[in-house]
Image (cartoon, rainbow, N blue to C red):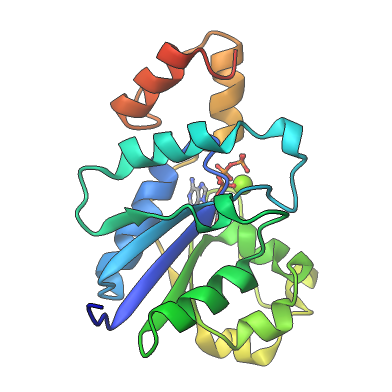
Length: 203
Ligand code: ATP
Ligand code: MG
């Protein structure tokens, strides 16, 4: 297998994928010289009820369409295929083994960091890989924030903060817009917009 120095993992529900995700992944890739960024649609996000989340096949196809123009971006169905819930720690363990000797960077937005102490085995996870936390409008990271008090010191050592151009875009808002028959153009790639309309998603 080809040897990589560093790999980014971009986890999410991607229901649907949008430019916030793409810019986070691309700026992290460039800043940390990642050889590739793997988009990993979650099967059953532990924090979301399954019936609220679109069938993973659709989410997978939309990510595929969204990343096709970027040769550094890949997609994996690892979490989708896993039965039961998807946990970041299991995914990171898998990739540490698969890309043995490479640095693994888990990419996430500021809102995710504020939730991290609810993740499975987050203390152990903190020591397993590196983390890139990108800015997201509406979420401020301050070390004194009570939401961060449980996160272990090793995480702070292994975490990089990356300011990115703020895009106040969320999948939740896109779903609501489609349901209300409002425009979603320029919030996500044209191919994804077309897919949503063609398949009648989120109506
Ligand atoms: P939802 O509204 O359904 O929660 P979302 O827009 O937050 O969707 P997710 O799939 O939950 O998208 O997010 C995947 C990852 O991308 C998370 O780490 C999240 O913090 C990050 N992210 C999502 N949108 C943005 C954005 N606009 N700017 C920066 N990071 C983002
Ligand atoms: Mg989210």
